[in-house]
Amino acid sequence: MYAIETKELTKKFGSLTAVDNISFQVKHGSIFAFLGPNGAGKSTTIKMLTTLLSPTSGMVTLNGFDVSKDSNEVRRNFGIVFQDPSLDDDLTAYENMELHAVLYKVPQNEIKERIEQLLNFVELWDRRDNLVKTFSGGMKRRLEIARGLLHHPKILFLDEPTIGLDPQTRNHIWSYLIKMNKEEGTTIFVTTHYMEEADKVADQIAIIDHGKIVAQGTSAELKEKTKTQSLEEAFIALTGHEIRHEEAAKGLHMRHWRSAARRGS
Image (tube, rainbow, N blue to C red; front, top):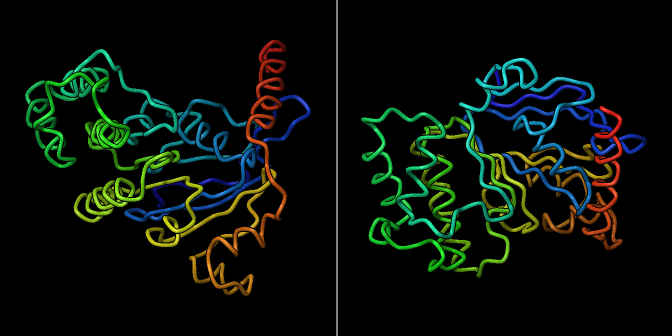
């Protein structure tokens, strides 16, 4: 059994096929990088994996639970750090953690110890009583990662976890994630536009473009396949050189989504 498995996974919004018949497996305790240009289908895939969207067809399981049939069990098995900030700036770091613990029904007698453990892990225990609005971008990211681990998830989804951060902060965050992956055996599913991150940390990589998986393998295998010297060069060789317009892709996606929603699709 895999930590994550998809078979012929498809998502359509009206006439738009955002994810087109993709299949991949993620091993337990691995770091899996899911790469693609803007508008390629990454976010739609993550939303299906995390029960936020229902597939049009195909199958997804997380730790053996069917995402469509066992959504409550699936949610207990993963944590997620969204690309966009999701903390409450008007609460303290501790209060953000405590709220998450209540929402995920962490046993009352474990909450304080688990919060202290994780805030120490990301070096924020000394700032636990400070309002999040006073935190830097890197501190907020570290807090979101700690919060995502609070309920002992077996899988952690990271959607562009280091976007907009300076290299020092990015390295700092990845040191926490790699340590957590090794010590707790947490499976990490990450999307990133920083190819050097994926090259350095990922055990396996899948590249999606125009809704289809165009390549899978280790970084070395992808470079060998494309006869290139770096993962960035391999990525461009597989997905092309044209500039992708993220906002245009998002707008098209949302128009199709609203149209499908109105029709009850």
